[in-house]
Amino acid sequence: MSAEEDKTVFTLPTAPAGQWDHLTRNEQTWIEFIRVISCGGDPRLTPNHVRALRELLDTG
Image 1 (cartoon, one colour):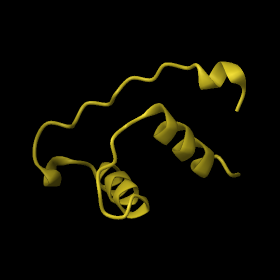
Image 2 (cartoon, rainbow, N blue to C red; image 1 turned 60 degrees about the vertical axis):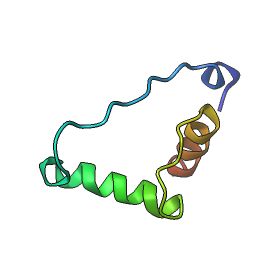
Image 3 (cartoon, one colour; image 1 turned 30 degrees about the horizontal axis):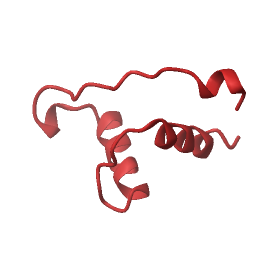
């Protein structure tokens, strides 16, 4: 990751309105994935967490 990417400002996503069953299957799967890799919790969004997740997903 370059120094410029480290300074990138990110925006916090907003929670989808409605119930769990109103989410698409893709949205549900991503939420479940984040919970699995965070040991069942909903981790607080921080720049370090965003960077770590980007590195984890960008291993290709």
